[in-house]
Length: 236
Ligand SMILES: C[S@@+](CC[C@H](N)C(=O)[O-])C[C@H]1O[C@@H](n2cnc3c(N)ncnc32)[C@H](O)[C@@H]1O
Image (tube, rainbow, N blue to C red; front, top):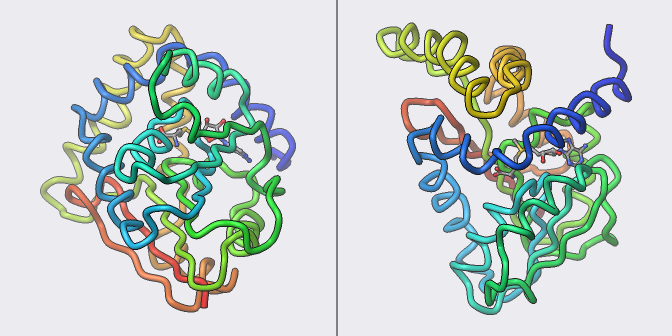
């Protein structure tokens, strides 16, 4: 039985190992749909074009970059506990003009290094599933949001369409780990991806947990046949 600490060590090591190939793998394995999913997520914050936003589990910064692309004055605090992921993202960014508006910080999503009521938006793309204690993370996201602010969680889910499901499961459990193993040299990381998706909460359960964390108004909407789900929570 893995303790929370064991899971954190495992997740951090896995992401450190695949960090140089993470962006490539994302694009190839999702057939570039990941770009669309991050665009849709970021669009939800268009009412807050200037206020600071926290991108949690920011990884190699793809969502942080989309957040700064869609609003030319927005500041983004990008937090991740895997320094290698953040460093890879910064290296790939080079001299991009958006760099001054990005503030990368190494920190834990279950103890967010930000004060109470600090940001107008919190985004988490493909990160919540990796937290060791999801409820603790959600409570922290609520704490750092300003009243009236918005939480956006983009996460993998399990398609429910009975015709599509077998194809997707074959891809996720059989093809994807092999392809990813070939590209990254680390098949185990993508076996973990499949098993963590299988073990993750149903959307209705995650919404209940968001409500328990204080997001009284919480909703979800499946994207791309339910391969991913976008969750929206408002801090009252
Ligand atoms: C699948 S990547 C997602 C990266 C990025 N958000 C994206 O859209 O591609 C998940 C990230 O969550 C980070 N992570 C997992 N648990 C974390 C925690 N407790 N605190 C901070 N970051 C965490 C990992 O280090 C990894 O970089």
